[in-house]
Length: 98
Image (cartoon, rainbow, N blue to C red; front, top):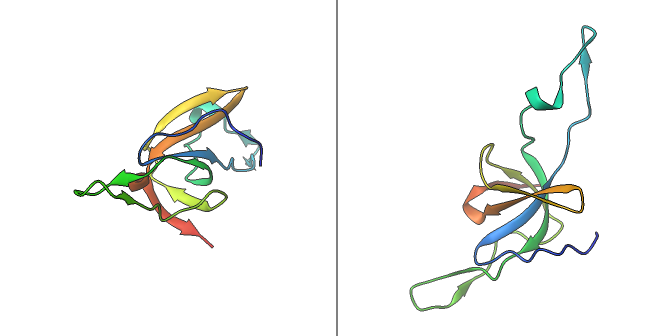
């Protein structure tokens, strides 16, 4: 995994979406602009974590390298070195894929 120049803050997580293979159905290719954002992603980097009422850091349930399922419209897209990443809150992660 390449070293990324973004370190998420707080309970944010940097993910990279796993692009679906282009499928042709009935001779029609769906353009990228019409495709939905994929929901599967790989965790690239973790922030410092959320804090509880006592100021103690709550550990993340995911770790770098986990394959996760994320909410369709969650997070903020960022582009770095011609690669697209998304910064999401831990709440936007629906589950870990095994």
